[in-house]
Length: 112
Length: 481
Image (cartoon, rainbow over all chains, first blue to last red):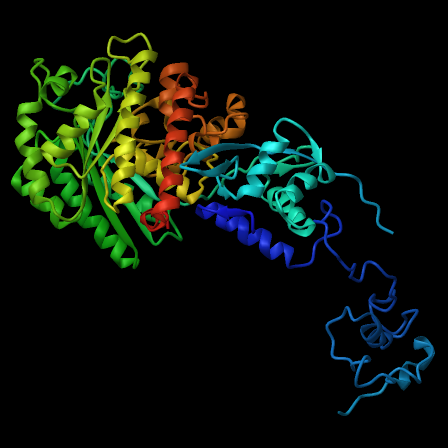
C-alpha cells in the first residue's frame, strides 16, 4: 500500500494480503471491489451445456456433444486449455464451424 | 449493467499515536501498526466522527496535490486496512482455539513448601486459592516423569518445549530438579526434539554447586526480589519475621557472576510502600547486576494493607514512564536496557498479537502440582476448584473448555470497546479470580492503567521503528515454534 507504511509484522501481513488481492481476481459475491476496471469472467456467468454428466452418469447423452467445449475455450478463453490463437495466427480456425453443435467436427488440429 | 451505490466511510477501530512528527495507527482488533503519510493522515482527520462518501473526500486530497487516481488509492488503502470502514459491522464468529492445541510449556511445582513467609504470597497468603490439605508437599520422581511424558505427548508438532520449575521454593526440592532435567533431556533427544528449562526462586538456598548446575544446563533463572534491603525486607521475610535480603544478596551476586549461559532476571512484586520503581530498578540492575528486571503489582483483594491504591498505581505508572524513556534512549543506541515490562510489550506489539485469551494458561501452558494435578497455570496449582485433570489421566477437556470459554475475549463485554484488548484480553485469570471471584471477569480495576501503559509502549515502538528499525529484529522471532 502506498499511503500506509506497514510497521509491525501483522501490518506487513495485511499489506501483503491487500496487495495480492488487488492484483488478483475478486469474487463477485463479496463486498464491492475497489473502483478499478474489471472484466467479469467465469463459467457461472454464461450457460454452457456440456460440462455436466447425463442422467446415466456418462457423457453420451448430453444435450450438446462434449467436444463442443473446446470451441468454448476458443471463443470465451476461460478454460485454460490449449486452443489455437484466433487473434493472430489462426484467425480462421473456426471458419468452417458455423454452428458448434453441428459442425464441431470441422474444428481441426493446428500445425504451426 | 453495473449499478454502484454511493459508499460512505467512517473511521474503523484503532488507537492513534505519534512519535516525533510521525503519525501511526494501532489497529483493533488486528494489532497491526501502520504509519500514515500526509494524505492518509488528512483523510483520517477529515472523516473524524463523520460518515463521508468518496466524492466528499476526494476534493481534500486533490487540494493536497494528488491526482484523482492517487486520491482514490489513498481512500482504498485506508479502506482495505480497515482504517476506514463502510456498511454494517460484519459479524465475526468467535474463534475458539482448537481442542487439541499443543502444549508448549509446563510449569512444574516441585514443592508447595517454602522457607520464606512472604505475606502477600498467592500460594499461602490471605488471598490464596490453593487447597493443599492432604496432598503431597513434595513432588516425587514418578509424578515428575509422568509430567514430562505428558508434556512431550501433548506437544505434538512442536520442535521445542519448555519446563519451568516453580514452588513453593523450587530449590527446596533441588534433587528432583536435577533428576527431571536429566530425564527430560533424554526423552526429548530420543524424539529429536529440544527442551529447555527455567526456574523461579527466592535465591536463599543457592549454593555454588547449584549455580554451576544451572549454568551448565542453561537453565534460565528468575529471582523473586523486591529491591534494596529496606524495601525487600518489608514483606519477603522468614517465618520469624526476619528479612531475607542479607541471606540472598551474596547468593544473587554469585549467581550473576557465575551463571553465564542465560540472562538472569529479577521479578519484583510491588506493594504499598514498595513502589519506588526507579530506585528498585537501579539497585537490581546497576548495583546487583541483573540483566533484566520486571515488575508486577501484587495480586490481592483491594482491602489488604499491602494493596496499592489507585494513587499508588498512578505513581507506579509515572515511574514506569521514566524507565520507558530511558529504555528508548538505550534502544536508539542499539543497547538493551533491561526493563522487562517494556521488552515484553514491545515483543507483542511487534508481532501484532491479537489475543483470544490474556495468556497461554490452560492452552499452551499448564501448571502441575506436587500431586500431579493439572492447573491452568502455576498460580492455580493445588486448587481443587481450578484443577483441569491429572498428568496420569490427561487434561479434562470439559473443564478446560469451561475455563477457556470463560476467559475468552468475546465473553468479556466490558473489553469490546477497548482499543487495548489485542494485548490485554481482560488481564490475568488469577488476578480476576482474586478480585472478582471469576477467572473470566475482566480486570476492570486496571483498565486505565493498561491503556496508558500500552500507549507509552506504542510511542516507544513508533520511535524505534522510525529511527532504529533494526533494533526490532530482536523481537522478530516468535516465542512458540
